[in-house]
Length: 142
Image (cartoon, rainbow, N blue to C red; front, side, top):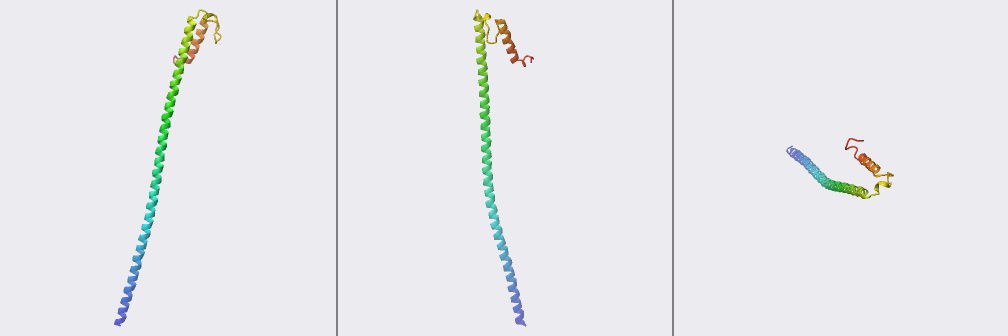
């Protein structure tokens, strides 16, 4: 019996060694699969980060474009306002010259003007009313 016990002991040791080998091999295979999956996830994360960086750069460009457009719009508004003021000044100068010409012209009170007024007093009244209508809010008039 001594020989059989030794055979059973050897068989048990071999079985235990095989089980340990299978467990260790399984762990290594599982660890290798986990490393591979981790590598794939890292690669995907890098691609996502690159995409996010590109979208961020696009957003920054769009913001800069919007700021330029706003600046250009403000410049154009200012230019339009300047041109409007210049047109108003030119109109005032023209009206002043016309008024001075009427004051100097000895026949100015006897001929009709473009408004159909027959004399200087009627023209002055028409001009005054037109001016007052344009400034109604400033002096409390409607």
